[in-house]
Amino acid sequence: MLVPRKTQGAGARFLFSRMRKIRGRLLRRAGPRLAACLISTWFIALHGPGTHAGELTPASMARIGVVDERFQSYNVEMVEVTGGRFWKPYGPGTSDAHSDLYAYRAPIDLTNDRLRKLAAALAPAYIRISGSWANATYFANGVWRPDQASGLLAYTASVGGRIAAAEFMNEPNVAAMGAAAASDDVAGYRRDFQFFRSLMKQQYPDIMILGPGTVSVTNAASELVASSGVDVVSYHHYGALSERCRGTGAPEAALSETWLSRTEQVLTFYLALRDKFEPGKPIWLTETAEAACGGNRWAATFLDTFRYLDQLGRLAKSGVQVVMHNTLAASDYGLLDEKTLTPRPNYWGALLWRKLMGNIVLDPGMPIEAGLHVYAHCQRGTPGGVALLVINASRDMPRSLTLPDASQRYTLDAANLQDINVRLNGHALGLSAQGDLPLIPGVRTTAGALIFAPATITFLTTAASNSAC
Image 1 (cartoon, rainbow, N blue to C red):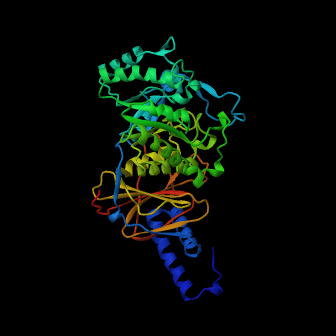
Image 2 (cartoon, one colour; image 1 turned 30 degrees about the vertical axis):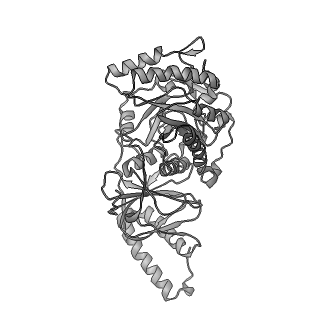
Image 3 (cartoon, rainbow, N blue to C red; image 1 turned 180 degrees about the vertical axis):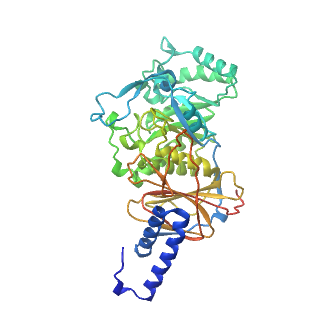
């Protein structure tokens, strides 16, 4: 936007003079691409209506909860471990997603150096090995038996491994989808769960029992929660079915409040069940992603990173202790491409969360509003420090917030929302030729108004001397 020269008065001349000076500083600090972006959005903000959301005061933000140190975790599908047919990734030649839902995949190579480096960067985390395919393994005469579970647990202990928690089944309220040979009704589930619970409490009392691991808000889910007797209430959530399973999720709605708030609506259902049948027990979301059945075509793009990080922010604020993304490296919703192990945009979002957001949750003092979501945690590993997550989900409106102190800024964006590549502070993120992760530097900002361009995700850290941190 340019103002015709003949209309410029003293105020306008002063404004453009200030902009030239600021642009010079930004060019030196952040590079030309980010400088141009910030200058243009700042200028729009001065003239655009409703763009300033208020002032944040990190030093006085109150502590409202604490999440598990492994709050951000992920799934590795059972089929990844054993090899088998799993949701077939979309490809350039995939015009009909219903013609062949599955494709064979060999067992994942857990010794792969790149895989181990990328997984280690998200540590500490829980790794959940499960999936509907696990339900169809080792039943006898329609009744679950502990033989195979006992062998697995004993072997794990013999090699020095540790299992933190176990769920009896994967999504028992839709068990038929996984060809389960037992527990296909509430009575069967109760019977078999008692076998499982007795085994765990007698032989492995240190392992937490999670359950029921149901998906969706149904009467069956309610009955299974009521049948539990668990240490932790667990549930699954997908906002939609993918195109493979004839779902209707559309990328046009991916930044809408309706879409982003679905995770909170489902949590409300399970919190009510937890409070009724297992009061005081922790609650974990042990499986979630953009869409069930492998994710939609845009699950691997920057567009889904808004859901991914917004979901973490919402659920931490609501008291969920652990959130497990499905999956680490399988199908379109994997954090990594399953063939190349290239990080996808959600991986870079996960890495920033792990680097910056601690497990003490703070009240940002600002409710979620249409297009602008702000979350606050104590900064990881920095006494007194505060980390903020600011999501501008508007496709066309910049927003601004005022901070009283200097901060380090980490802004994610992409050339196109459905791009598989993502930028940090204007620079493309990627692995080195050796497969190593890059440095993740912030850009220093001064106190005062900060502008958040449309369709961007920004982390901020500030030395706030917050006594809760």
